[in-house]
Image (tube, rainbow, N blue to C red; front, top):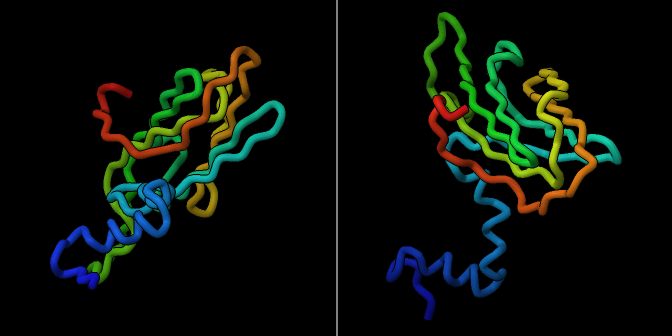
Length: 147
């Protein structure tokens, strides 16, 4: 008989057997501290990333490093209200690093940046040479000096 108290990872093993090991990979970015939610869109000429980042004051507060089809974002989320003390914290606050792998290489000199209603929209022009292999996105720890 299955007992989750005998082995603390037993529930995960049972879920892996039922759903398959790759099932959890889709959810990992949502369970990591400092994780930012992201959607990636594509048309014939551009790729757009929409990233949920509440607490930015201006779009230039984000450092963006682009190389081929790999983007690294670094910034800080600050959510504060004067004359109030926080009693429950569900919105991540603090510095973050995010690595994103795009479906194809993009032009690092042609980035359109917009920030509205807590969403950062980054639009990149595709490069017409060899497309890169798409792997998905993940969080990484990157020092600020490398960006």
